[in-house]
Length: 354
Ligand code: KG4
Ligand code: ZN
Image (cartoon, rainbow, N blue to C red; front, side, top):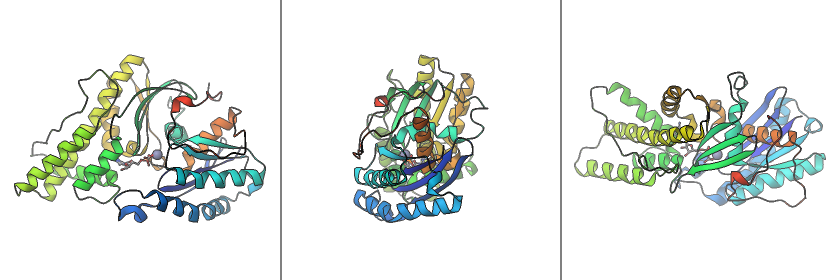
């Protein structure tokens, strides 16, 4: 089996080829960040138009560079949601058109399932113990969810954010700190510079919802706290690059610990011994360290996607599509459907990996 995966749910155009024998045979990613930077966020119509312009040439180059002819491709997977409807349609239409003309099956993939299964793209993950069941922590720009994964394709939502997604909070705080969009990686970089400030007591920001029994998250209170903290420092004439780094560190620490507090609760409640952390924010090294240390104390093994597959990419979509094809699933009609909102719990179970 050789699967072409297409990702266009937001502002990354991602294409990749995956086979179970060779893993990721080739992949290509184009980020539209430069296009949207001036607006401080993703402009949906511009995203759709750019996907439209780039997608087909990217598929052509991907196949040429991998030395793959269309005749070798056995199925096409595309992100069918959740995401920006216009952007999703561009990927879905091309994927369905290619599959139809190549006479191979196609399948619409859930973007968050793509993220959640991305750790399986690490060739050593299964040898290192990655298997079902596991607890999933999904941390991206649009989502922040705790998911109990009982078996392949069987998802139970245990908790989610009641306001901002954690990546969104990173991006908004980064803007307040004057960092370029998208701010998550820049904020991590700035926070790391506090390593040389060991003689200064770190700021401590609130851990939202920490005391509550719920497994839901909240980040808007923390974001407002940072806003007000920065505004008061500026008003007092006490603002500097150094202060920005201290705030970045304190925010990152509070956000990460808020995530870990709920993870720990969910691990204790479910008794699960494996934790998968995925989505753009799972690239954050401070977050990985914090979760690794906490989970280690509980005897829980943690798994993350390879760094290149944390943020949106075509490989995770190709892999999730492969799992669904291998479970005998595919698009049943020629109607092209995408969904801006889509719960993981609506997905049918898979037979592969049981
Ligand atoms: O999964 P993703 O690529 O897109 C969505 O599905 O939303 O996640 C993007 C998010 C952005 O908010 C970005 O700032 C955040 O992931 N992100 C990070 C890091 N790398 C990406 N946040 C914190 N630290 C990072 N190193
Ligand atoms: Zn994503």
